[in-house]
Length: 163
Length: 130
Image (cartoon, rainbow over all chains, first blue to last red; front, side):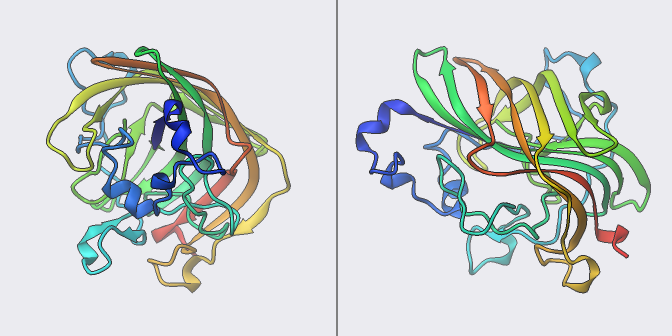
């Protein structure tokens, strides 16, 4: 998950360096992500838009099932669940957007029925844009490599990334 | 820019070439590198406007602490955040990300997870829980 914010807005920041308007819950961020310039429409795993280098893409495999847990965009609507958790030391928060960590006994995987290796981190830093602006960027990156069982019940080996 | 949300709810998770990531057998490090990987961006969550984008990512994790057992496995409800088992080491990740889409490119060369948290290690969940 890449999130970017122009540093040109710093004059509106509070003493913490974060804009008061950015003190959103993770749910609030996802629901109002237009301002942050993030987020996406659906795309099939393994599908490639025109112009992509096909040699870099693996043969598509069935979509993994998501973890059952997550958080609700609308507390009154269980179908609004986002199957995503944020591991991290209790009491801490991500650097720029301030998303609160949920603890260390929190599944870093977005997919269930998985066994293998993982690596997870929320990286932060500055990005230079071709528009001349400098952005604070926060990048939640997770990689998974191993076996998984999709809805068809077949076990496969594959690699995935959350970004 | 993300891979999107799949119809089954899988969130922003995309298949990658198996050669794009490597894990040290002893859990000391991991690497992830992709170039010109296609993603889709719609600017607004679930919005109708989509733009094809590409990213280059080169990130390395280095373990910086001892391993610890994480998760509560099958002893909790499957929807519980702790419904997994893992042997995790804290890790620091560093790297760079370049993104490109019509109208805007960006380059981030000194990304670092030092101000938050990272982890590395084996894990299992779902049907693999004992």
